[in-house]
Length: 256
Ligand SMILES: Nc1ncnc2c1ncn2[C@@H]1O[C@H](COP(=O)(O)OP(=O)(O)OP(=O)(O)O)[C@@H](O)[C@H]1O
Ligand SMILES: [Mg+2]
Image (cartoon, rainbow, N blue to C red; front, side, top):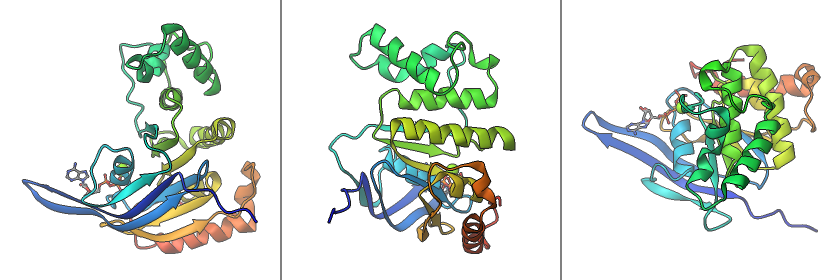
């Protein structure tokens, strides 16, 4: 019998309270879950329930008020992609992608080599010299994904990466993200407001309650891989959609 591998991340009894001049906000409470290595997990929940806060805690940007995140290695590398690509407008695609390695002691040649490979992986070959102003929203997000992979992260956190894209581009980006994930095998945690996107992409969907966010459902997605668009029309997909919709019924902000 094989035992299951040690989780890449354990989130243990997390609580985050923000306090500033305007008052106190309890963003997360009693929040626990773990991520298996190389899995693809999505996070869905009402607006303001603490999803972005959770990603920031995992990335080490926000300290927890209580509880902790435990990783399966001492200094995990964590990549992050936000809803807006946040590219530097005065830098070309190549230099935007290279950025995370520029402060490391890596040679210029190696940085360029790695950046070129990733630009190819996200389908932007030929655009190395383009400026962000000349890219579509989908292309800019591809650059952001390539940049997040530069340091070969152990954990990739995506915060509504396709939220600003039109529906068709969004679906195509989802398929491309799955291909990248299959090629590079990362532990992925992605926030989305779209129920079909959550089901289509992930192994598990975690549903958060309204603020303070805690997990109210940990749903296994029983669709086989590789995922194909026709799976949207299967009975399993319909059932999973129902389950998530029921769970999110009281929340105002989600798409189905
Ligand atoms: N740095 C901060 N200081 C004070 N309050 C904060 C801070 N960051 C987040 N909050 C508050 O914590 C709560 C959760 O915010 P968060 O951005 O994590 O929600 P979210 O689930 O990502 O929402 P959305 O779906 O709209 O992106 C909100 O009430 C927000 O105002
Ligand atoms: Mg958010």
